[in-house]
Image 1 (cartoon, rainbow, N blue to C red):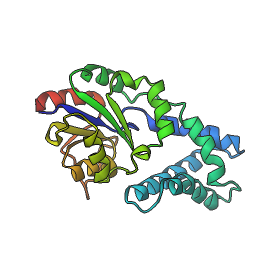
Image 2 (cartoon, one colour):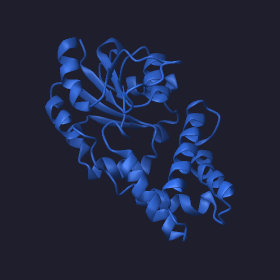
Image 3 (cartoon, rainbow, N blue to C red):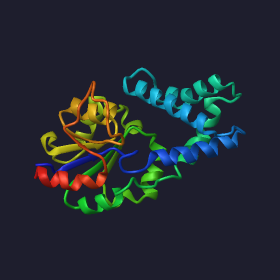
Image 4 (cartoon, rainbow, N blue to C red):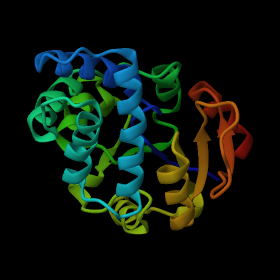
Length: 229
């Protein structure tokens, strides 16, 4: 029986993609860089690559945050550095906290019936503001952010920390819900916790990791949990 729900934050509960695009537009323009769709798309691919390296332990957090911009600017011949733009981008991103489709209603329906927690690989200061502005404290009992913990998903030590700080935690009664196969689903697998992929793609690549369950809208979660009861 599932009693504890561990939700990823970005693109699971809150819409990171829309906030990222708006924050990038603001930040690039602050440095007189035109945020074309082509530039934003190239940044997106570089950004994913850098966060995956963080998940594999190949880069530090600061190397990710600054390096993604450095690589983009070097490829584009733009005279700006990651260090210069990163702070501007972080402050802009912290202001965006729109919910994913159906997320607020789903959390409202599940609140009080399950012990719910946020598990995030995001930057602590940014996530704290977004969590507060979106009033997520009305739904969740606690918030676990990797920058505060010292380990990133999918590292088992991240999940071990969460388990140690959740009262009466039992992995067999928990479910990880997230949009990332490489961090959320692999992390849950590493920790021996059931997983549910919120798939933003109709045909996700299951070559290296596979979730126990899959949904395409967060609103489907309530029915899934009901069937597991």
